[in-house]
Amino acid sequence: MVHNGFVAGVTLMIYLKNENNDVFAYETQDEAAQFSPPGLVPMSDDEITQHLLPAPSVEELCQRIDTAADSARRGVAGDPLRAVEYDRARIAAEQFAAAGYQGDIPPMVAAWAINGRTAQEAADDILREAAQYTAALIALRETRLAAKEQVRMLMAAGEVEQAQQVVEQTVAAIEAAVAGIGNNAG
Image 1 (tube, rainbow, N blue to C red):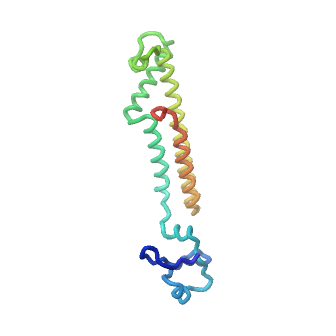
Image 2: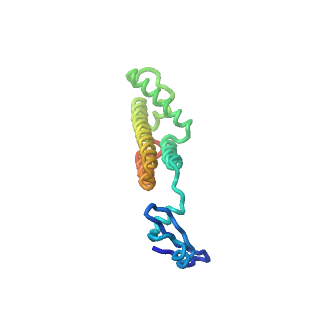
Image 3: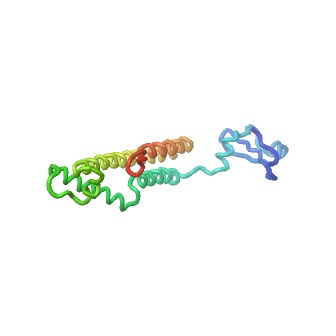
């Protein structure tokens, strides 16, 4: 599509390309006819947009993946100190379970043994939640690292659009991986 005219007082350029995808821009049809080399063809709206907007860098695309994973981890565990709390509760629950749920109830387990929940039920609940959290962390790590590597390969091959699609799919997969786990549980 050849673009020419005015939109809100802004001149729309005419964008043409050659067989090597070199871009030529002209302000008027007359200018394009007078100065353009032979064999130029009009660019599509998508091609013009890609030409005018710089392609994201590998670092920018990988950062979007890392940011989504960071957000997902925070959604599961809350702040970093809460993650430490959850891990210490897991360790205490593992030790209590390994002792056959006998002896002194660890304070981290006792804190959850409320509202009619026994110490064993509390320990088992902590361990179940910890297993879900660990599985989510593993899934996040595997998804994040594999996607970043795929983005690097696609960008090296000049496949910017496919790399951007990988980022969008990865962000959605990361969000789905932590739905209903930890602090994300309804």
